[in-house]
Length: 89
Image (tube, rainbow, N blue to C red; front, side, top):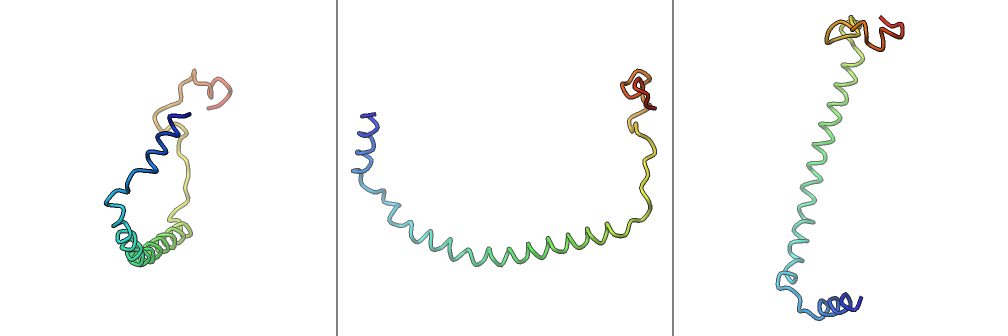
């Protein structure tokens, strides 16, 4: 525990890095760029809204009724399968 206290004390007494003094400009530039990202959010919202509207419209007008032709899409059901042994097809 004493080693941790010593390391933290050395860190507190160390001089600040030179790049730390110029960090304010970078932060302010990112805040200013936030206005551009807000404009992009509007375009994203419009895209999502259009996709949702197309999905609802497509789901409300089916072209034909769906029907399952077979329960075994990869081939016939084996006579020794659990479904066949339990009284299935």
